[in-house]
Amino acid sequence: MKHIFEKGSNPDKPTFLVLHGTGGTETDLLPIARHIDREASILSVRGNVSENGMPRFFRRLSEGVFDMADLKERTAELYDFIDTAAKDYGFDRNNVIAIGYSNGANIAGNLLFSYQNSLKAAILHHPMVPNREADIPNLTDVPIFITAGTNDPICPAEESEELKELLEGAGAHVQLHWEHYGHQLTMPEVEAAKDWYDHL
Ligand code: MLT
Image 1 (cartoon, rainbow, N blue to C red):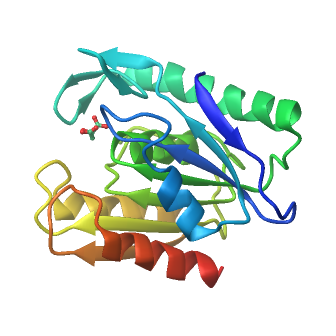
Image 2 (cartoon, helix red, strand yellow; image 1 turned 90 degrees about the vertical axis):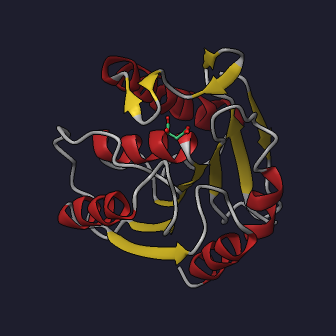
């Protein structure tokens, strides 16, 4: 997968798996990842699907309606890519924290819904429930920070609560942070994510 890897200055720090929103690229969220921890490594990936030229991590049939077969396949592809990248770049596969926004948060959520030990922790900005049929693996003590907008037209507030409950049902420690905006990624929620990360 097309990606950027930046080796961090402190090998004890995690590797951030950085996943952009629809129409974004692997450079979009680099400033946010660096802001959260400038000593961490960064593996920032570009989605392999193109929707009218806009990169995405998996296909959708319409706004908010996912192509579930493609989601499954692309999630497996991303999972394998992280394994390979850990070997190639020599980072600790067990110390990977996702930072995803929108479509990128959705595939990060689906990694958690599909594979045990896929991520050590996750920061999900404006995620949806990726798969209501999932048999979610054991996520005991996996820390997850979700940010959501009370006026998000793409992800209704109830869906953010539903995602929190599903993850908690699998044992994860979930914190849900609200902003009174829509689907956009705001600076206050990035600061809230940093504060959460600093206290991990
Ligand atoms: C998705 O398709 O993943 C969600 O609708 C969010 C988006 O990318 O617009």
